[in-house]
Image 1 (tube, rainbow, N blue to C red):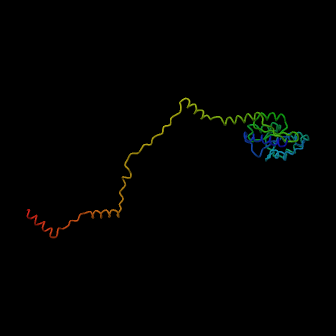
Image 2 (cartoon, one colour; image 1 turned 60 degrees about the vertical axis):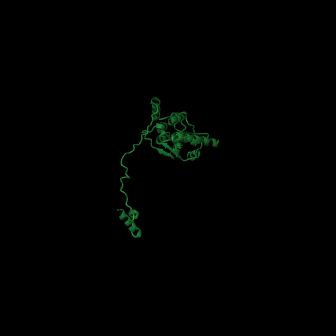
Image 3 (cartoon, rainbow, N blue to C red; image 1 turned 30 degrees about the horizontal axis):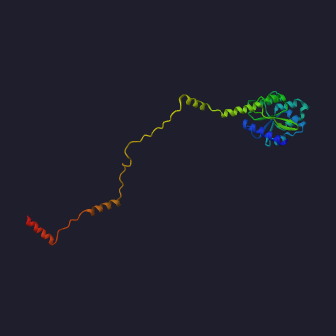
Length: 245
């Protein structure tokens, strides 16, 4: 039985964590009826709740809940002493209202503070079930039990999931445009080539002194040397030329 209870508790906690943002430490709002049942069944709330959740728990109540126990005197003297052990939240109700109305006001507006409600009050339980995202705790058979998520909580979780999966307005508008006007062709602009003087041609020629001297020397070597005519062969040629003249 214990294994089933812990599995059920873990499953319910996971549901509220994923869909409604509950985190550790879990805040549990307790009223006088829950404390009275705990005393009757000899349940230590401070010890059993953390063991049941297997995590850290923050136990709290309201000023109106303690004031209600004080007003009933000896009938709820024991529950009053138990409530005074927990953190007492200021509610600002002047004069104090009933514990049920006070706690219901804490849970309204989408349960912003992520409270779990621990109560044995049937009217308060029925009223709370109309608000999604509020885990309920009660005592039965000497044990604390976390109630399964209500239909309102499941419906709210499904609506949130569907809204996340639904397409956005921009996507819908884009699809309608495609259906009405067709897909727009994206034309790539060709880059224009810049016309002008080649910057490399404007550069001055680099002078290399060693190479220029070698070129000059080569030019000098290419010049033909004229040979002076000397010897007996030249004299004969000169005489023949003179005769012919």
